[in-house]
Length: 218
Ligand code: SF4
Image (cartoon, rainbow, N blue to C red):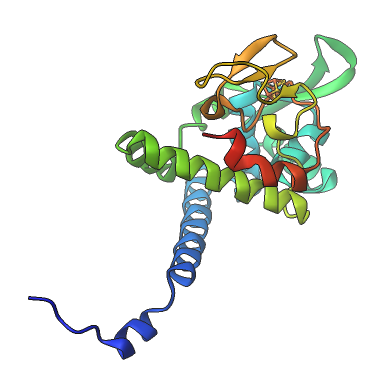
């Protein structure tokens, strides 16, 4: 039996846009709280924990690069790196590839503390159970979100194919892999676009890239 809608109740519920925005805010807050909890149990600050996570992924990085990655000033990151060195989680040394550069890397103690936080494990679990079409929509949404953050200066750097000078869109007559990375000379599909590429060289404007997400990611 079809029931008459309760307009007052539905009005109180709010629009779908409002609830999506609400839900996103809760995810952000939960992520922050989870990071804080993991950091506290390791005896470090949330920023120090973020730095450890980046170093766990990248192996080594200069302070300036770390600052861009965690979206904080080099001075703040430098203080946190010094604290991590003092606590035995990280070390600073001359880069073996470029002796003029000082890089930070993790010690054995630091490596042991980079286990994926609980929230990340939950993400993997949920994403693993999603259909390809759902993941496509989510991927597009997240790319748009990051590019919009970048456009407004909320995120300093996002090393994504869509803003890279080596990205050549729609150059191949191949529905699966129509794009190309000129640096590695390899075809790229929309779902293969990178979101944090170490070889990225910024060239394209995030505002223009934002307009092309739906066309490039399909
Ligand atoms: S260098 Fe990296 S970011 Fe640039 S197009 Fe190639 S894969 Fe994408």
